[in-house]
Image 1 (cartoon, rainbow, N blue to C red):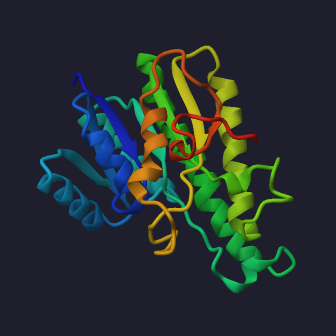
Image 2: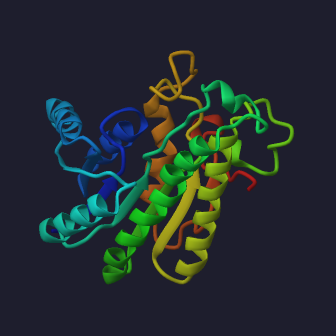
Image 3: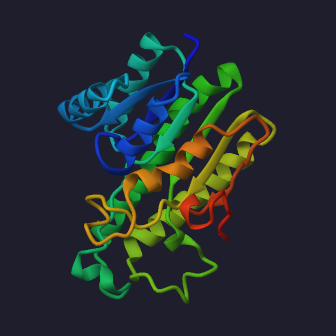
Length: 247
């Protein structure tokens, strides 16, 4: 197996699918599409096949310890390596009325959001880093949001969205701590904001496409040796290149 193996969580639609599609266009990368429902993943695999692009597929619920263990067993048996992990799977309850204020936010909703957007990322990243360490090579990309920037949170124009924002602050913290642990290795982990896109999460009023939102993820997933470690990046379309965001 000479191709790099890329796992993209929640990649049967939207941004995850766009990232999988762009990575599948690279001859040296073997993409693995994952989704909680296997049939959704198979449908995505078929859409890629219709474009002449090849991808493998497997069910994966990153919130389930059992599902993650089953996925890792299959991955070891099928490829015995992983080189790229894009933590794309996430939830955003911002449209719920209670999410308009931290005074009214529902604690169960906040807990569920943290479970998917933070703890599940920790779970799958913990599970896959040992496979990267075997070859001392890895590129980990965490899909965050500029809404999680503490530097601008008090003055930006975005909705308050406490559950979503705070979960992504947690994700950014996870990125920074993993980066500290991986310092000096060739396993690079970074976070980025894909911006407001036309997806199920972003809605039809969004100004940009999922393909545009995927650009920075692909850039970070294919960083050269010695590339950024523990960075937080804006979507590239805004600036024409990789620009760091303030934490």
